[in-house]
Image (cartoon, rainbow, N blue to C red; front, top):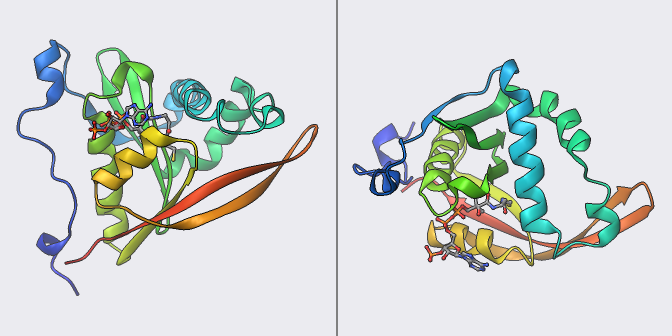
Length: 182
Ligand SMILES: CC(C)(COP(=O)(O)OP(=O)(O)OC[C@H]1O[C@@H](n2cnc3c(N)ncnc32)[C@H](O)[C@@H]1OP(=O)(O)O)[C@@H](O)C(=O)NCCC(=O)NCCS
């Protein structure tokens, strides 16, 4: 059994960046059912921000708000939300050893919220696994820079075929891994 103190994760900063922008620091907590609508709203907006320029049009037209609202029930039990006085500003979802979803609303980007969510997810995965993995769309340079700076290693590219209402869409992505134990 590896001691909890040996787990390599980012620790929350003692001074939260938002304090410099007269915002309140967010609180991280487990999602509950009444959060579903807010999670879907963040997921929908942030998914389109990050993907519309990098995936086939038939895929992004197939991703209206109701698509994300319909998927929230399957992920909410394994979701952590970041909440401030404005409401839910981001969330992260872990599936076994996979960092499954990490989405921060535009109003929370560049603030450190994403780093807090990622660190929480890494700690959760590290409780049961040595290595975490995730997939990120190749053109999503902001997310790839974010993961790389936090110790995630690009382990290669592949294509994924996704079904849409107007036929299959091929999406290039990269797999990243992070070794979580010293
Ligand atoms: C990915 C995400 C969680 C990262 O959170 P964030 O608050 O934006 O992250 P940060 O601002 O701390 O870091 C982003 C890094 O990318 C850089 N960056 C910003 N815009 C960029 C762009 N257009 N292209 C490349 N890099 C960019 C930033 O400068 C920063 O790097 P630096 O600290 O070395 O300067 C957030 O952007 C997000 O939710 N995006 C939309 C959804 C998404 O892509 N989710 C991940 C799916 S796998």
